[in-house]
Length: 230
Ligand SMILES: *Cc1c(COP(=O)(O)O)cnc(C)c1O
Image 1 (cartoon, rainbow, N blue to C red):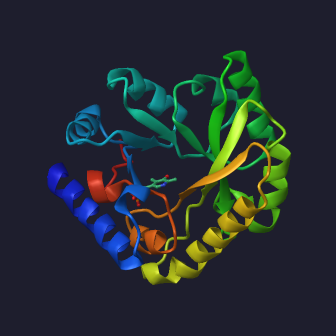
Image 2 (cartoon, rainbow, N blue to C red):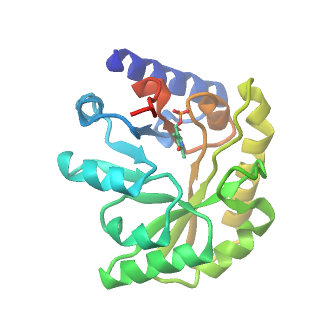
């Protein structure tokens, strides 16, 4: 079943790229494996996927040693400063940086290990009270502050769009994210690269791709519905 799901997602990504006249290689699929057992993750790995997303540090660090070394882990959930140290040097990318204080802690822990950690800035593009992320209006200021830290490198932006009935409803928000992304890219800030635009989930990733996403984060579409009752 997982194989069929994965094939369907890749076909949908291809179709969206075709529609938008984009190269399919410019869109990376992050398989969001939160709450899912290792057996499922290994099955998807064996089908050729390497990028996996988790939203909890504890779950991520538990799964990490059980997977092959070339697995690329993405931290996509809200991150507390006291847990940063467990991630540094283990994750490919932290998608969810939304404050200077968090970036500062990532900076400190990275320097201890002599590395530079790639991060994305999470933007609360729908301006929802229930969501993490920096306010749209404050994004540029936050990025210029973080750019002074040499143990982190900003690689782009991430957003979790609002839940909507019709995926088209999120198009204007994805477009706003893309415009912000290009705007910041054009400022050529030292130590800031705008290479990654992480947006789009199971319900709306095609729209996100049409509007310029370079990473889509798909959970349910690959692994099936999540069970939080356990
Ligand atoms: C759970 C989650 C996803 C995946 O959501 P689906 O709707 O299951 O595809 C993507 N991004 C973040 C930040 C998540 O927490």
